[in-house]
Length: 195
Image 1 (cartoon, rainbow, N blue to C red):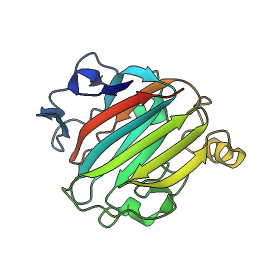
Image 2 (image 1 turned 30 degrees about the horizontal axis):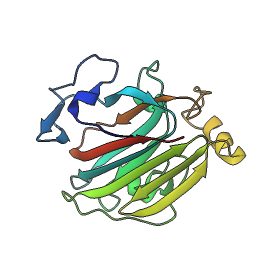
Image 3 (image 1 turned 120 degrees about the vertical axis):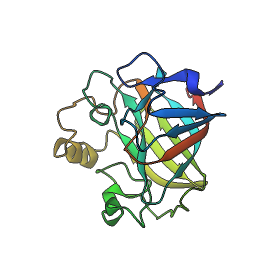
């Protein structure tokens, strides 16, 4: 069953309500206000195995992300689960590091090929998570596949800023739309539970 994720399915990270001061719902487009407080959106439901499809746009130099299986017990959402990086590589410093480029598993795995954005234009994205198998899709192409149980990946996590979370990516958790202080818009968000 496919579920449409409109504003009613999101709330502020560690909050109860949709954060109207930081995000706007513009006819189904969720728009992060770059001038407002950086408050991430968290799905009201938690998920383990799922396919999330969405469209997004970034301003020039924009930085955002979609995180998954996030445990809300951490002070910051980025501590609670893995992130599919969304980035304007051409105009953001993180675009110089393969591990933090557009489509990467943030700070851990680089995408297999670059996917340039056009600032202000929408691009399709998809995140597929089934047990230990994860895929990142951009503009209709799979740019990264990985195994959460892979020995090299777990070693990289143990040496990273995520090392204090032993369950990083393993358990059921929430989806996060990141407000990184830059203008980002999301629309056409749909999630399908996978067996």
